Image 1 (tube, helix red, strand yellow):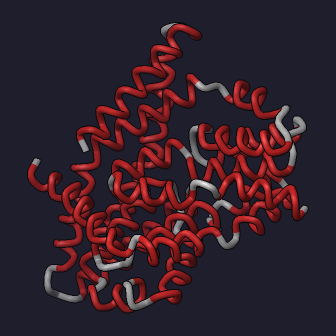
Image 2 (cartoon, helix red, strand yellow; image 1 turned 45 degrees about the vertical axis):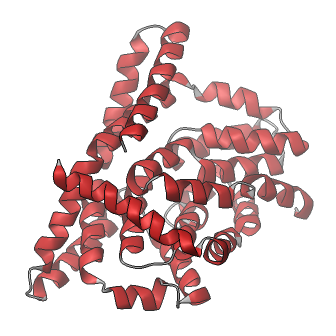
Image 3 (cartoon, one colour; image 1 turned 45 degrees about the horizontal axis):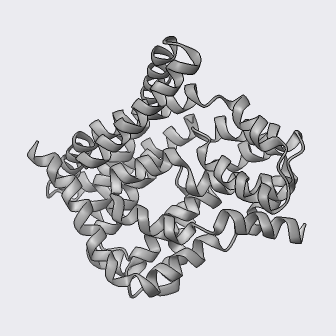
Length: 160
Length: 182
């Protein structure tokens, strides 16, 4: 988290400085765009974070673990993909859940499908996507990646 | 935009109701604290990401973006977008503003799809954690089987959904313009 913050601050500072040195008020325009976007998206972001909070509290990790731990084979791959998508939160939350599912006896393909489902179909990520970039992009992206998590699981089972 | 807020509010209320029935009233406070805590934690990151996205729109000319990420960039644009996606740190509230600014600056739909999917699947900043928590074997298998996905998604988008780019841009402009008016 702290590394991400340092990298982003450095990038933001460097682009600000560059815009300022152009001397044509570009930096002001950049700040105005940033502010307008932020103000407009703020209610959506707030809503998305509240929703994320509810998902974390209402869908307990133990429930997902118990549900996925016994899955294997093709059915496991599909259920793993969906289970992954439902895991609320970033890698700090998702990876420990998936690790315990894997240790509890889920197949390799199930675990791979689960990670891919979390990364590609993630419900929370999709909320932010809808809020910031709109449903046209979201629908297209989801359509394109629809088959990826199950495919990844099947490939993992066949190849490894 | 309004529909999205209403939709999210609806899902939240359903979840809250299910939670209250199963776990009691305390979960509402717990959930609000969890969500609020997350928001406070990422707020500085958010501000930096919005500033970066704003500056990208001002600084990088349409010609430059078009040359590197636009429709003439072809497969080179897709590869570049994939690398950018792998390198960008932070969560969805960080990379979606940046993806939106790329689109508005003239990037083609497929390159932006690759950027987002590469962030999802190739994220370098996530890698140490993935190895630490899931182990090297599972991480390696996962990387190998999903390696080509970001490129495939971007190429398909560019070939079949080229005409869709302007429609997506239109929607982003609307999202950002409403902010100016309110």
